[in-house]
Image 1 (cartoon, rainbow, N blue to C red):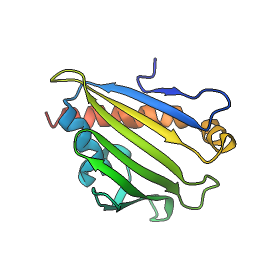
Image 2 (cartoon, rainbow, N blue to C red):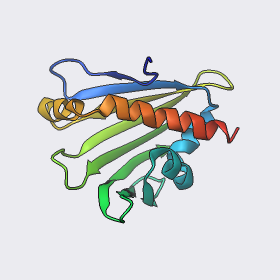
Image 3 (cartoon, rainbow, N blue to C red):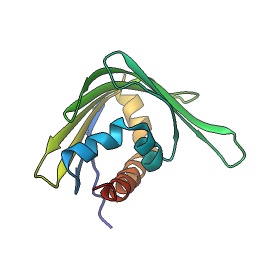
Image 4 (tube, helix red, strand yellow):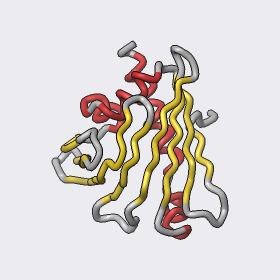
Length: 155
């Protein structure tokens, strides 16, 4: 099955670009990234903090069935323009990856479709390549598929 979420990583560069078109109006796609309750559903993680404003912070945490924390991530929101863009840092705690900078842009295609473009910059080519060794592309495609499915029900 073809992945709808495309990951473009050019050799020798320390960034990558992720694109995905959704069968969702722009407002709903943006809401999927801005509303903590919706983020929790499609990402399958607990939103501890999500301050959607310039200099706001965010923090996510995932636990296993026994309550052990298995994933923690956090960052700072540098720019938040409703239905247009979010610029933020992303850092996984207890992981060998450094802080990355993410530029999320939301575009209206039609009244019922929209597009997300994520430009992610890593500290080095090696860090970016290390991330790509993980099932990163598969994981983000699965997450975006869940986003599409869950948020479609909100139409």
